[in-house]
Image (cartoon, rainbow, N blue to C red):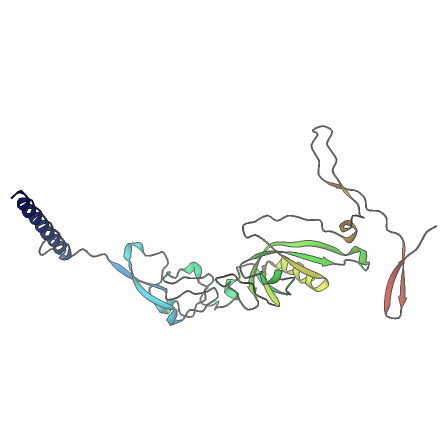
Amino acid sequence: MARIRVFIVLALAVAAGGTFAYGTYQYMQNGGPKGAPATSIPTSAVIVAAQDLQIGASLRQEDLRAIQWPSNAVPAGAFGKPEDLIGRGLIMPVMTNEPFLPSKLASKEAGAGLPPVIPEGFRALSVRVNEVIGVAGYVLPGTRVDVVATVVPTQNQIDVTSKVILTNVQVLAAGTKIEQDEKNKPIQVTVVTLLVNPDEAEKLTLASTEGKIQLALRNPLDKTAPVTTGIKPALLMGTGAPVRRVASASTGRKSQPQVAPAPVSAPTVEIIRGDKRSHEVVEQE
């Protein structure tokens, strides 16, 4: 008898719990008491990206879709009409379902492609590269590089000098691509476009015309801009003037590096044979 009573009590408890849960569900579905209107959140139409869009893309109708967004949480500057976006270019990538904001769009007059991506006061300058200059294809859009120039400032070959002329320069495009792929694979191209100001554009143009340039890939988190003095073959081979540090007598600390005077070059004679020109050292007794 005791077991039967326990079973009856358990069955009644399960039945009562199920009835209460069902009643609660129906109550919530009907919006509360009878006659009370269901609570609704006001929404507004917001235009978002229908797919992932890359920098420089020109927006089309199929790139856009409208969704309902809570009115009290609409992002500032968000667009509600597709016609306000069609034909405008992107200056930053946009992900699927991301709202379009003015900060990621070029002006209506700027169009699409590379030009709207160039900030005011800067220029896009292209230079020829090969597999070596382009760091084996790892100079990709968005990366940063230093530019090393090697030139001969005089007629004398011993004066050839290599020096870092530009630092922390952004790469705008590699070939015709202005966006990296998802896997950041190397791209073998013959032209790289750099973002420079007018002064830097002059230096880069002169260096690439009168000598050779080399791109040195940087860590994007490295913001330093070291100033170098350049190097000549004599210093490279250890036959030039050494750099000395002179200790301060008062503090005992090392002062700034001092360069000893360079040795006087031996006199040379220029010899012209037809269309060939050479320099020979005059031996002194």
